[in-house]
Image 1 (cartoon, one colour):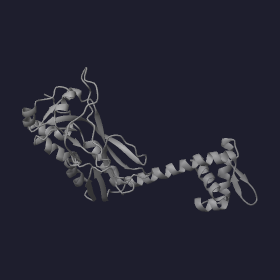
Image 2: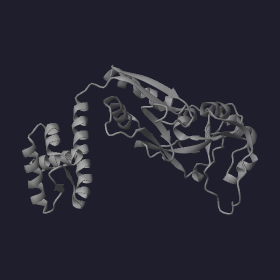
Image 3: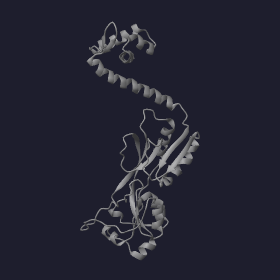
Length: 303
């Protein structure tokens, strides 16, 4: 504790260039500040402050030590603030950005959350656009894929795989593709990223002797995964979709998965929030709730 007092005295004296001013900030006398700094210098074996009759200033060694000590005091302040936040009841509006398909995985978890935290008002935005979390004032975002924004903190929610699916009626008319190359003889419905307008690639391992660029005949493109599911179920063509959103349709016999042995690619969902030294209670409990209760089961079996 004496070391901590010495560090606080040293930092305030360096900031104000005055023992008197540092003492006012710390609620002690100028003499007490000077003695604390002197004891710290004696322990370290270096001079931290240059003294004169008019002012004090940092020595070369003191300038190096000052930067470290500033961080130490800031971290202590953050720890105190975080502990005080823990005692607060989570409340207020929570703005959450989710992909359109997020309702399938997030909504089933919200009834328990709202019962547990009735003072939190959820404001959900289902949109496949890549939002700027910081600029748009979003509290929490759920995203998949690779994370690139260094301004955000993140926790992994879970991995998921992809499936290629079509309706039984479609396969009855056009046959079932046995290899990725056979897709060139089938109609495909493709997802278009709203932010870039690019079509999503179908990540497929190739069969032996099945090299060369794979050209997928495109019957339909859209920027809404729910529409792709509907198009595939209506027999428009084959779709490449996250496995968890077509699992129920496969179980009901509305869709059939193919080429599962060639689908090795998987992705992850993340929950993100703006990087901040103080994590607010409403964000903390929402992130913890998702990480605790959101589970992705095994991919659907491939006939």
